[in-house]
Amino acid sequence: MPKKLHLAWFLNFSSPSWLGPFDGTNGEDWIDGDFYVDIVRAMERAKFDYVMFEDSLMVSDVHGGSMATDLKYNMYAPKQDPLPLMAKLGEHTDRIGLVATASTSFYPPFILARLYATLDNLTHGRIGWNVVTSSEDLAAQNFGLDELYEHDQRYEMADEYVGVVKKLWDSWDEGALVRDRETGVFADHTKVHPIHHEGAFFKVRGPLNAMPGPQRQPALCQAGGSPRGRAFAAKHANTIICSATGVAEMKQYRDDIRQKAVTAGRNPDDIKVLYVVTPVLDETDELAQAKAARRAVPSDAGLELALAHLSALTNVDFTQFALDEVPPAITTNGHRTTLEAFLKKGKPDATLRELASMPSLNAVPFVGSPATVARQMEEVMEEVGGDGFLFSGALSRQSVAEIVDGLVPEMQRRGLARTEYEFGTFKENLLAF
Ligand SMILES: Cc1cc2nc3c(=O)[nH]c(=O)nc-3n(C[C@H](O)[C@H](O)[C@H](O)COP(=O)(O)O)c2cc1C
Image 1: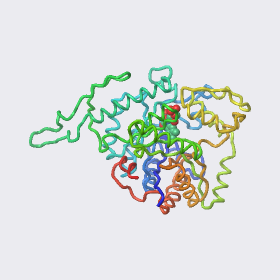
Image 2: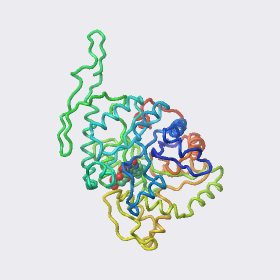
Image 3: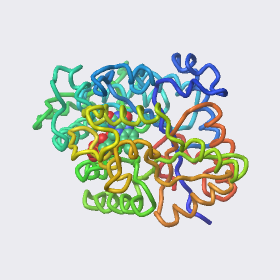
Image 4: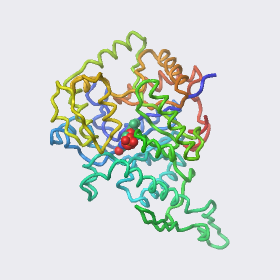
């Protein structure tokens, strides 16, 4: 029997595809969250472990010194806060894990601990927190700073931050809520404890004034790519999302995380590594190949979008570099891993235009019918060792149906994906296999 894979989808609370012939009224019905209710229910039908909503806190004008590209392509804005959406999705689903991103650089830890404890209660134990440190100076400028703290220092701060948040979630003992009708005592004060945290970066008295949810400690998701980021992820995360390219890099990443988890005193099997993939599916292998070939043709918009994304994530204006020359050495205090991956996509003499025209990061370019892609996924995972895939790419009801009603049933037939949820809470399902 093959090893079962964990499945999730990478989403953002902004508009899905809206210009294509099968995109419905997506330019509109994402705003009140109804589009996301539809697709997350579909993903729950396919027994996904979770959906992950990314987030950032700025409108980017790094590219060319103008917000035009960001707003034209709905790159980073408009984007709504994913946290309230989790409450809505929780009402319309029963089992799927709901992960929302929040940045340790900007939320006070008490506020964050309280938000996620409340959401864990509202969703009956299905909330997860994607822990990020942020990568945009523009976001820092919305919170009284001129620029982000230095890259590795952000992780030092995040490390203490997560410790504080965990202490706050633990500040209520099991059974603190007695609701004793005889004595009239609602909550037992001897089971609720201040945390008196005083560290290098945070001072928090506690206790939390909300009680923890069914998971007590919501599931933690992380995506560290740098050595410091990986150590942080291996110490804290229940699931890690990773944009490695190619089987060798995927395996190296997971082996490194598992090793770092052991160093941090954890069981590496308690961390599920999911790789970003964008499979191209169609009824037959030939049709899927043709579709992939059509999508690979570089366009002016694709080029502009790729460079604008990179500008926003690195705080470096890519319009300053000549398109038909090899880019100079560039450093960033933002998304280091993304920049490095972009620059090494092509041969050393690749021009900026060539690099930006190449397909974006993908663990393995899966292309074919559902049966073919399911088989390819099984083969890749046998080499990598586990644990699953995070789907991404252009989002529409059609692209979701191709995965949840085409690929996943095929994976289930091969014993590669679960056919029922094993447990009631997100973290338990994540650790079920
Ligand atoms: C799949 C994936 C999703 C991510 N989502 C976010 C996000 O929502 N917000 C954010 O600020 N960073 C996000 N990141 C960036 C990571 O948190 C991290 O900064 C990045 O992978 C680079 O690693 P490093 O911080 O160790 O250099 C994401 C990265 C990946 C691979």
